[in-house]
Length: 258
Image (cartoon, one colour):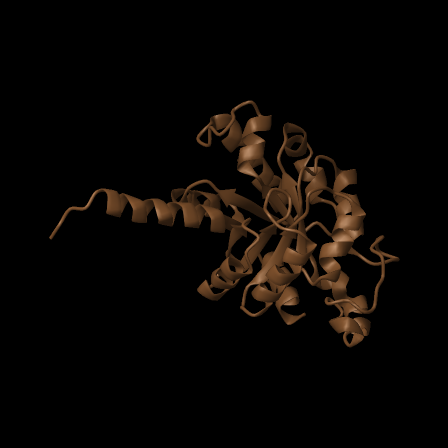
């Protein structure tokens, strides 16, 4: 649990933390990304490929590296949290959190009673198959990370109240969904989108919470850091494969000769 505790502590201190999305469902690309040096990796089980069995292999691969594994679930439903946390995720990213009540539900799903509603099991991977259960049960609420996604106009409007929910660690912007829901689909330079981004950052700061975002291009990093974002991601394993293969194909289709 050292890596998990360290990640939440680093998030709370608003250290600049670099991540990437993994959506291929490949334990090999997960291992590569972790070995490269990312602070955290997002295992995407909202839009990415994979199954429960794949998730286990991904978590095992990331555990062999210094990176921490966050799992994005498909919906804000307690059973989904329970499954990924029992398998050993360091935290959960929850899509489409629009209200404080939805944020409170997410926090409760991460935590055991009496602080939440997470079902209790002793013999699972997260608790060391029973060997670490006493310590894990006592301290998981302090160590597991809860990330809520701000992806709609309603969520932006409620951002301050969402950030104020005890147990929410990161307000994370999904720029594509947010742009679509603001009526400026994929217009990542739109003033409408950037005003929402700034408002979310201000909301996080007001409650001393962390602002996070998936960058749409590398050049945004400096600007977003200045705005107060510190839990940041760029790219994905599928994107890296596509980009690399395109470059290789272009070199072969257009040889320049010696």
